[in-house]
Length: 179
Image (tube, rainbow, N blue to C red; front, side, top):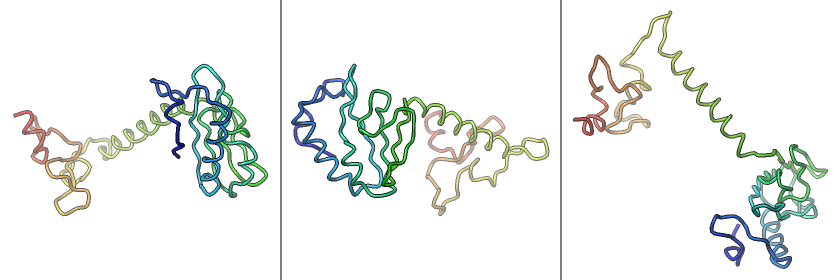
């Protein structure tokens, strides 16, 4: 949501500068007017070294539709939503869910690492059959999807780059770079 004049309140690092009371009201009115019909609202206004400015007052949350979700990225510094409870996920009386997880961006690395680990484990297990490593030329993940498939990428094979000491024939882009 763009608010006229917002660029005047951002420093070179991208952090918000302190806002005037008049501008805070302008932001609140603009954001809350649009957000009342939204399914999800993600708040991000942060002022370095200060509490986060309230951009979604409780009075606005009371007008949001049941099932709407507010993700307050600044719960750890007071929150942009007045009803945010740091470290908690709450549901208001009118059914709005407010996510106040502290340091939410810091939790992404853990989730990404677990996802990568699960994907790698599943992939490695797919290469083993009865205790033996099996490299199947029929496996689209290994050698790439065939021409005509929605998943075919010209010049790129799958994850199998080399076999028997040579670059796999479907890795034509890689062959051009290495040759």
